[in-house]
Length: 460
Ligand SMILES: [Zn+2]
Image 1 (cartoon, rainbow, N blue to C red):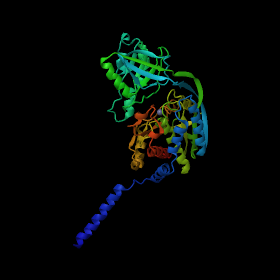
Image 2: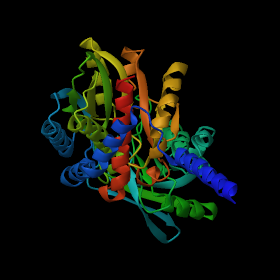
Image 3: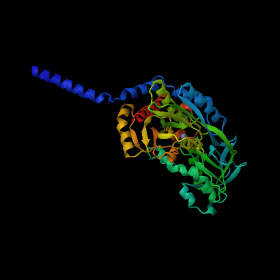
Image 4: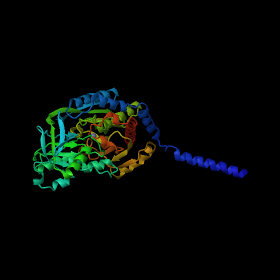
């Protein structure tokens, strides 16, 4: 009996130890710093209230608009209030396009008229009064390109390409549909169409149209282009199966002369290598519908909050860490291009950059455009994030704003922050991209993940 109970005790101790090992946090020298970063974001965080101010007090902020200029002022004041070592405005020149006041559309089958919800694509010319035409549907840009001009001439082309539901990473579905928005107007006009309508780039089915920029080609006649909601696209597609459909719409959007604007820059000076710069940022401008909450209010706020956390925890970076609120990502990328060019002209040394422009959802990880060794380093730090639910540490990386840095600093490593992507395209470029659709904890966790990642990158 005695031996049996002694054996039981030893057995119990061994099992308890194994359970302890299994559940204890992976202790690394960095884990207490990362824990304090997360605590600061979750307990004393400013990200959610800062995003509320940007969305509710400033609102949508398309380049060249009064709101964009006020957003610049707001950002400068905010960075100054956090006591960064240096805050500056970098002058740039941006395009200025406005949606105007009229944006209405209908489709007609015999004597029945149906209203549709539409949004001009960014950069589109106006319709110069109401225009109407017979509608022709295609399901992709490839299908359109194969058409004869006699089938298209004087008609309104409806490109009804659905985003592919089977992609787990929704950005892939977006990427494969993006050409209908970017190049639909040029390809339809090439065949003589008078206008083009596209199905909104969204995986959700609702009444919101989603805008976004289009490209024109100077040698091809510019035609008006608009996106209709996915719900309207389905209805229209059903209607056109057995009927001749006439589509009518009016838009008074127009392009104004370019105007001056700014990137907003704040930094913490490095204590060991002050001349070596790590840039973190997103874009301050947004489309003019909604409030630019996920795209990209969340991204600029993530990076602002990451720097604020460094400051508030008195973490002294070795390298200079710079937060940049880029202007004009949505329709021209003047901010990203100018920042890279000016950095090169000033003979600065840029070693790494990170962009957050995929919304304010729960963080999943980071991707990098670095070589094998860089990827190995990313995978080696993954252990630090195990208890914070981050698991994506892969190849990828870059972004529209930080991409141009690569042209001037070929050695630079570009990173992207990767949040969960499932709901991003429900709100992207739509009237529903508002503050209420950003979750407080998810936003805070994103800022904490970025601050932790930059902490590890800086001390690498
Ligand atoms: Zn964006």
